Image (tube, rainbow, N blue to C red; front, side):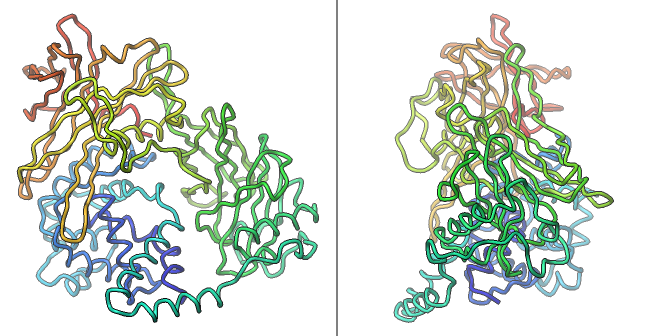
Length: 581
């Protein structure tokens, strides 16, 4: 069955979306997933884990108190209309009590039978609940689940979190000595690194490949038969605490100016390992990365981040003749400010696709592979690291409008929308906090809303706005954050004079769910008029120190924000997000 950490590595990606739909925000979903996987009753079977997830969710005293909004942009395959429908469903789910909400998720996302749902959640009727919700409920739930933020969590982080939670539980039970003994036993039984310099001369042949997947295809790449190089790759895996001698090559080559190797374990329960670095690099100097793919995976991909002026590369391995599409975020035209998706259709006649991006970071990369005669599938690339603005503790940052400063966590989370969508790191950008303000919450506390602007290396300007809140409960602090969307402008746009407006979904109370609140950040002493463009009466935003907000509803969201001198700015929002990818 494996250890808790083994189960966590295998199952967290399947469990996190369901936890997100139950818990309502990414931080709570991760906490719920971690505690479920750390439970001594956790097993590898998906249905059993979901049962345990629901059980733990029903014990959480703050269930249903957070809005279903993700920290990252929505699934890149979802249209603006899909995201608007999902946002509407999120508001409806927020109005349900925790058991009713869980019943909907189990029935229409996990595809459980009504009888099985009733066993887990007595007194609920999922079919009756569905009659009160949109008819395309499964589709909307799929889009919402795509906001769970799985792309910013990895196997090692999950395993570490599960180990930490399980350890704390053991210590609280007074079993610290037994826990230490278990750790020692694990260290003895776990496979250790291969002795350095003593690895056998590698052979490019493999014994008993799996019946399907990338490991069933003959090894590929111009360097895959270089026995000395492959032996060096095995030693490098050994130095990374992997049983290097048990790994054999699937692909080794220098492509697009980088050296890329994919190594497969001879054990069917092992995980694939990528080694990447500059073309011609010695194996000892390569990075070892992975994302939990097994040899039976039908297609795999890796991102090799750029350094300095060097762009990132993406390499994909699939079956010969497969169609490969790579999306890398958005591109902003510096002349007009127009935004287009950075999507590439890459030929892969031999099943190998390699491409150089127009940016140094590959966080936004999404890969879709369509094998011959088979269904299209998403492939999550492995990557050595993510480039994000710091979101942890740090100094407050000066703000142009509203409050004089913005907290580091709120500003960092908001800037991460820009870095993720554009592929540029903070050091590549000219960043300015354009505004910070407080929105009232029904319990007397407040939400912090922050707008960040950035000048891209091309000169084009982008802005992003987000809502941040931290709630301290008995078991710790839960942080929620949601994006209000972003806008883009041509090169030469003056950040100091720019008006930023965005429509955010802000939680009002448990009965009515989330409400749309339009926030405005402008230069101080500036008036701003909001208009839907649909014939509704305009609204003049009442600004204090350049910040204001309105919860007035119209037939549709506001589209433009206009100053007395005629300058017109777009109003970002769920259906008008220039940074959606």
